[in-house]
Length: 190
Image (cartoon, rainbow, N blue to C red; front, side, top):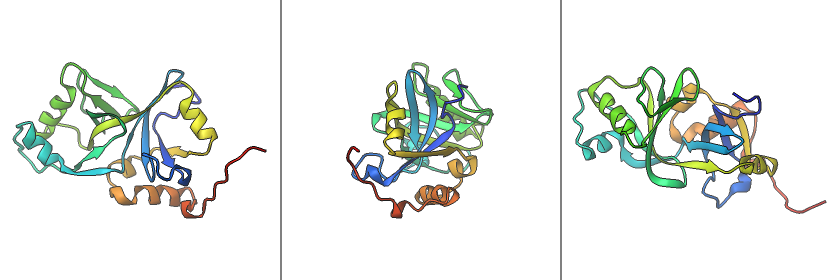
């Protein structure tokens, strides 16, 4: 991994992003290189449970299935992906870290395979199901960071999988000793 890479970091949207798609978001970066960056918003659940998703794709569960479908980002909003622990993988899985992987729906049905394994009790121990993702072109994320649109911090597995969605941003801002409500941004050039 490149020393400047923000892979496996959270992006916390700063208040400058008021009225933006990313307002109050926590985004996990899973790719970051010269070609751009990719991530998933991990604190924006939809009203649809993962159990409902399994019913819709006609998968019967052999155990209790937890979780909600998340709105992963503004790009390809019907594109399914899963962030999960790395003990499970398909041909369409890539590792973010030794512990965290992403499975995307390409041509072979990797997300369906993952959902089926979860329904059968053979899937990853921890997981998030998302529709859509966040993407940045070359240099775009770096420019947004310079404009103070984001603050970054290393990703935390406990927050990623266990922290209630509605408290993730606050938990991370507390860990960083930052009170986002006190941020004041002024535009202009010197």
